[in-house]
Picture 1 (cartoon, rainbow, N blue to C red):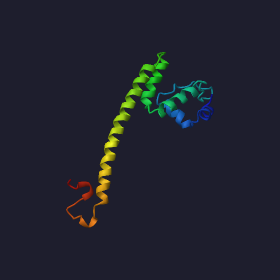
Picture 2 (spheres, rainbow, N blue to C red):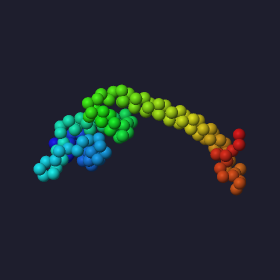
Picture 3 (tube, helix red, strand yellow):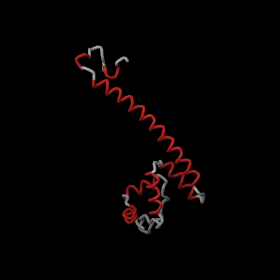
Picture 4 (cartoon, helix red, strand yellow):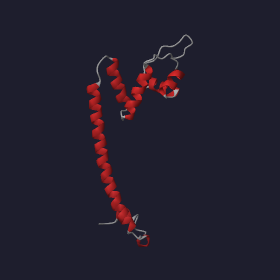
Length: 133
């Protein structure tokens, strides 16, 4: 199937398909006598997998590693399970950091609400951020 047909079937642009090919996520397709890419039918399924994996937060390198396992005939389930675990741990860590940041910003917002700009001096950079407790 030509790249334009594949693009329409997959909901991607031809540029995105070429990018995935260059990134090693799609094997180089055979070429027609005229030099056009001639993708096998199963490429649309592979592109759908790539998009789903990206939606789940996997990086292109991680997706490439999953595809490499599958292409080698191995089941990638254990590898995917580990990737999911790493991503969940990372999200949990980032959420904890965001909760800490939210608490700090709420404290600063309360301080800002009670700060009179007339009380600021030239020595102060910003009393909201540097006020001593």
